[in-house]
Length: 274
Image 1: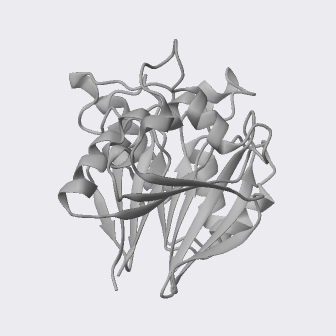
Image 2: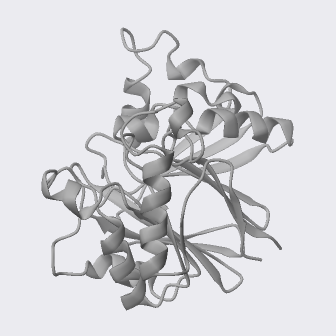
C-alpha cells in the first residue's frame, strides 16, 4: 500500500502570490498524506482549496483533517474547501490544542460567521464531524495507520503529528518555538528515527533574535533536532512570506551543507516513502 505526502501550501503567516515566490509556492500550510486507503490532510491554510478540487476530481469521498492549531494562516482555506460543500463527502476534523475552550467546531464556525464571511458553516452539505484529543495521545485511522501526537511551544498551543504506516513515518512539526540550548524533548520523542520530518523553519537565526515569542523556529534548530533524533530526511517548512525564491534557495543550500538529507518544501511536490 502506498505512503506519500504532497505539499499544497508551504508558507506561514500570510499567502504571498507574487512571481518572486512561485518557485517554492505562495499558499499557506496544507499537506496531504496518502497512507494506504486513508486520505489525511494536515492544516487548512489556503493550499487546501486546490487540494479539495483534486480530491473531488479523483472521486475521493472521505478524508481526515488534522489541525496543528487554529491561527488564521492554518484555517483560512477551509471556507473554500469544495468537498465540505459536497453531499456524501465525509470529513473528520481532529484537533489537539483547544481542549474544548472553545472547541474546534466553534473556532472553525466562527470564521464563517458574518461579518467575516457570507456563507455559514451550517450550509456545508457534507458530513463533518469534530473530535478533540489531548496533545500527547495516539490514535488509529483505519487498520494500518497510527497517529502519534505531541504538544508544541506556540502561542495558544499547537500539536505535532506523526503518521506511521507499514514501518514508515512522516512527522509534521510546525508552529513551534525553540529554547536556545535546550532541545525540545516532546519533539525529539515524536520525530525519533522518522523517515521524513517537516519542521518549522520560518526564520534564520538572525531574524529569530528579533521575533522571540512569536512561536516559530529556524532551520539550524531543525538540523540539531534531526541529528539528535536520527531523522532520515528533514523538510524545511512554513516559509516566511518575506523569503522570496532567491532567499529560499540560499536557505536550502545552507541547510544542506549542514544536513545533506534536507530540502525546502515546494508547493506541488510529492514525496513517496513506499
